Length: 332
Image (cartoon, rainbow, N blue to C red; front, side):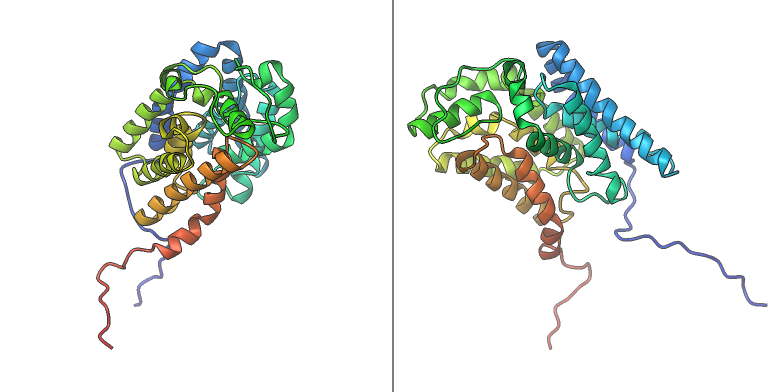
């Protein structure tokens, strides 16, 4: 008598098991980012709290609604939508109109994640998709908000060849100085301390670069993220800033570089799988971030630098594929 046939389910490679769960990893990311988010809420008050609440509520609500309409099992408890909402809020100016934050959260989940099939299938970082969408769609509305959308701003000189400047105000002032005279009208080194600990002139994620660095180091030590991406990103950004005649430390601390390098570019799904690929990916993010900052119309180009490299991640995996275990070169 022949044995009965049994069904076997074969999933796509890689067939690797780990004690870490998706929810556990997401909780580590939230925990690492929490000190910076809490400090931003304390420092900026109600505007920051509102932006955090709306962005997180929008991402969780959109994913729950999408799963309900599609009659799929709920995935909001894996923590990925929570991380997306938190990262999105940290990338936004605190005085962003609430309805723009709501749209950004919806776009981040609906067009940045669920339309591709959900977690693990998206091509681009969802939080950055949401931010890019509203930044390009309603830049004027955000700029027209009280204090240009920011919690506090510095007085800007003539912006020279720029029609408008969107980004962290210290970067905007530096960009305006370069455009007008090619030299800086303020001491960049004097900005280190406020940028590290208490900067109220940028987005929520720019209040304390020091807390972001601390959170990123925790994730690296814990093995949640690979050091190659942030090191390649920050190192390239600093080196090119120096090559372009600017202060490298100021340029890696200002803007969204720290948030992007440690928490956005390191996204598992949208970054390369190979070690060499991750290093090249980080270098590419730093390259395009620096070029966009010094030669583009928007000093804060972190969002578009990472999104561009997200699109190249599959290609980097193809060209940096490690040698197959047990493979030997043929003598023929």
